[in-house]
Image (cartoon, rainbow, N blue to C red):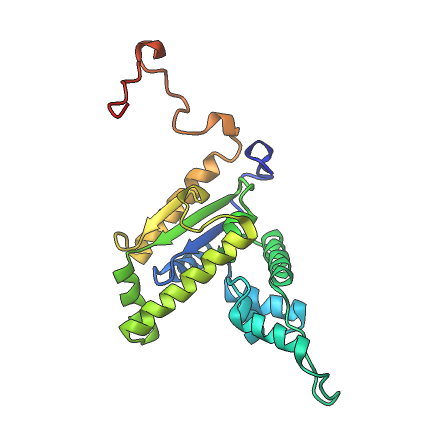
Length: 252
């Protein structure tokens, strides 16, 4: 679906906020606080629980797939299931989902939540799943590496080495997931309406900034896309475009 085919809002209300976040940037905490302030439903780990229920697997197995594409554990277990001899009927065997099966179940859970309530959705590729919806606000939360390491050390009581390793693992998994499913990468700023650096703004300040962005985006829901953008309502520069000449390239 191209930009010209975007789905316009069916009402004058924002239906959801998606929160993409670098691990350790405080994005999950911002999402929780935002949902509480707005009295909206928070869709975070509960999505994993619902997917596990839909697929008939344990929450632990669902977590192994969550925001990761083709994780090593799933590949190994799926591979073993092909070479192990049939197990005794006394021991039930639960087939683990492949990545696409998990993705489809997750997509269904997110769309159902969106149809039921106004929601704050944390990660799960929601910035791409809902990309064409005008009534969704997309947020990216980032912070410098050192700030994120300090956050994970403090919140998860990890050593610096383990905190850095966890950051690397989580960020890489999320990047792979978005790339494999949507051929995009989370750091691309054009996927978002607003990018927030929590090294500059506190978590509460970030919540207030998102609330301001919500109000502003709501004002433009019924405005055609052709009337939006940095040039909307601005007159042309004085003079004629033909007055500009490209200077010669000194390397040629």
